Amino acid sequence: MKKWKAVAALLCLGLFLTACSSENASDGEQEQVVQDIEIEVPADEDDTPDEDVQQEADVDGQEESTAESDLDEGKEEIVVLDPGHSSVVAEGMEPLGPGSSEQKSADTSGTSGTSTGLPEYELTLRVSQKLKSELENRGYTVILTRDTNDVPVSCVQRAETANNAGADAFVRIHANGSEDSSVQGAMTICITPDNPFYPEMYTQSRALSDAIINELSAATGCENDGVWETDSMSGNNWSEVPATIVEMGYMTNPAEDELMATDEYQNKLAQGIANGIDAYFGY
Ligand SMILES: [Zn+2]
Image (cartoon, rainbow, N blue to C red):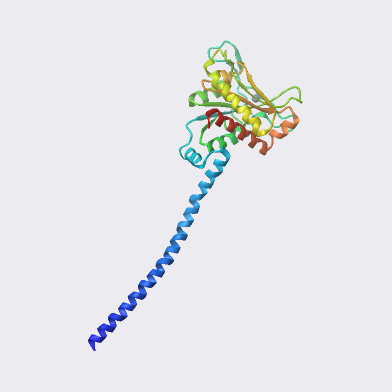
C-alpha cells in the first residue's frame, strides 16, 4: 500500500505540477499582457517628443531624421538678438564707429504706435522673445542684449554683446516711424561696402539682410521695402559680426501699428525672421 500511496502521491504531484505549469503559462501570458501594457505606456511617452520632432520637421520642411539630429545635437550658430531701445534710455554720446571722431546718442527713445500707443521698445522686446523661442526650437543658441524694459543699453554695448559672444548673426529688432502716416512696409538695414570700420562685414551683412527681409515679407504679406545700406547706424558699425537691423513695419501707420500689436502677427514676424536666419545659414 505504501508503494501505491507513493505512486498516487507522485501522480498527484505530477498533475499538480502540470496544473501549475499551465497556470504559470497562463500567468506568463497575463504577465506578458501586463508587460505589453507597461511597455506601451513608456513607448507612448517616447513617441511624444517624436511627434514634436515631426511637427518641427513639418515647420522646417525638413525630413524627420534631419530635424531629429538638429534637435538632438543643436546647431553650432549663435544668434544675438537686440530688442531696440528701452524704457530707460542710455544717456550720453558714443563714437559712430571704432576710432571715429563723430559722436551719436548712445540710444534714443524710439517711436510708438499712433493708434495703439504701444512703445517701440515694448514691441521689439515682445517679438524678440518670440523669435528667441522659435530659434531655440530650431536648435540655435540665442542671446538677448536685454530681456527687460527697465535697463538702459547703449548701441555700442549692444554690438559688444554680439562681438563678445562671437555671434554668427547680430539681428537688431526695430519698428519704423514716419511723419507720413500712409508710409508702410518692412525693411532691413546694413552697412555699405565702403564702411569705414568693418567693411569686411558687408557681404555677409547684406546676405543676412536680404534673407530676412524676403522671408519676413513672405511670412507676413507686408510690403517689402528691401535693404537700406547706410553707415550711419552705430550699432551696426561697431559690430564685428554680420549685422542687420529689421524694421518690422511703421508704427506711424495706423493699420500696420494695429497689426504689429497683435500676438498673431508678432508670431508671423518671428517665423519670417527665423526663416530668413535659416536661409542665411543655408538650412
Ligand atoms: Zn528703433
